[in-house]
Amino acid sequence: MKNKIATVSVITLMVISVVSCVSGKKYSSLSDTSKQYMNERDDFKEKNIGLEMKNSELETKLASIDKETAQLKKEYAKVEAERDKALGDYNNVSSRYNELQNAQEDLVKGNVRETQKLLEELRTAQEKPSEERRSSQAVVRIFRQQKGFS
Image (cartoon, helix red, strand yellow):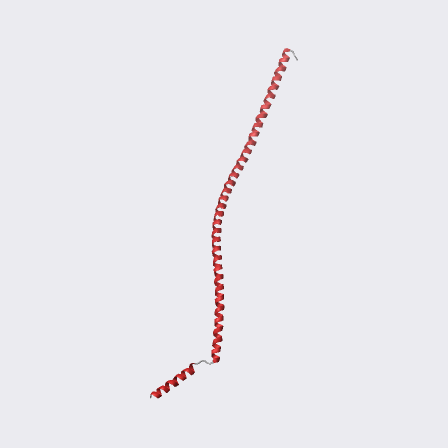
């Protein structure tokens, strides 16, 4: 019985070792596939490292652009406030200019009327001495005639 058990054990071990062994062809094929996968893995690692570097660069650029955008927004708000102030100042100056222009037109119209009034008074004043001169000349003529000087 011991002999039988030993024989069965040896046969079992032989069957297992024969069945569990891989043929040379299959081993070669699996070895080649393994090498191919390892090469692909190495390529993927290289690409991954390249992409990580590119990603890092892009993140740095993005941070820089975000910073610049924030600065530009501040400057834009400042310029917009200055523009609004300038526009308000322009409207005030324009309004004041229109008021002054209207006042000047009124003054010129008033000056024309005033000038016409003064001219009329001057004519009247000039006509009075002429009438007075004529009347005084008439008085002198009459006086001369009466005294016999003529």
